[in-house]
Length: 399
Image (cartoon, rainbow, N blue to C red; front, side):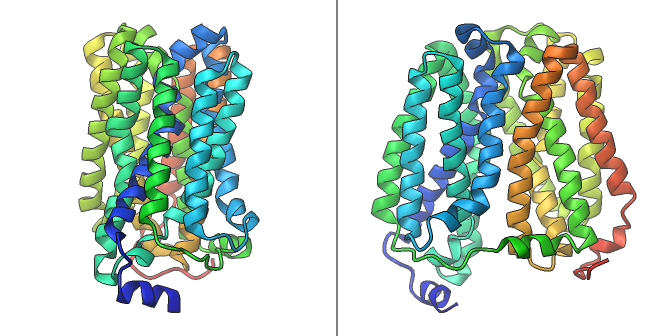
């Protein structure tokens, strides 16, 4: 606590530049994790694998990031977190270069594993940096900037990376990520102060959060929604092409619309969830069920396919802020609950892409969308079965 007080009393030099550097790091990490979604068709064709198998490019880093987040900070011990963040970004450089040079799919998958390690290690530290970089009254602004990297990746990173891959080659998109990561690593090293480690959240503390029914519901509902989303969204490029009749060259632009809708959904949920967190969380799986479940029936022409995609992006963009508000109302220890949620979210991304890949190859795109809808239905039922009084502002004791 002394360290936090000191940081709050006098912000270190270049504090806000350090905040920006961390934001850019998160932007690149989220872009790297989800970029294969937009390039999936190109990579599958170029390396001679099925779209389902190509979905492993999302599965592998998601699963590895989930386990790296709690374990990697423990593994590096007392290493200065400034050094750790810089090393994680340099690891992203290596992973991006190897991805661009991979001669076959399995070498590419190995490079994607390094991406997962980078994401997990970076996220484990970056999420709690704001109080150590700026004065206490500036922490909310710093947090907004840092986590703005997530939204920026959805709106700009993944669509622009997809467009770059379409205009040039998918390898160029990965190489560009490597170059930007190298610049960001230099910025982190120059602008961050020394950050001696604090004691990390212990695994036992993570488990204790599940004693709260509110946290259990949040974790399970989020897991179901994210698994369902990525089982379907990982294959949004072939969905748009084969179901909606949209040309591959237009997918990158449509993902930009998807990302912009996500920003709007995030802002709207931030305004609504503070007053009605239960309703905000309940609406998410219900709308996703309607959109994704109806896609094979309604989204069969370009206009309706684009309309459904925009609604899909808007509602999924509301997930993080809605669940975060729920956790603030119910978690005994919000920091530990957030760490637990980071594990669940990343693991669910990887699991969803894996399940979706198997379904796409087994039952086709329409069957995959309906299977994802079944998970959204399960999440909705789970929330409906949860008393709304759990979110009355009092943190629930173990039930």
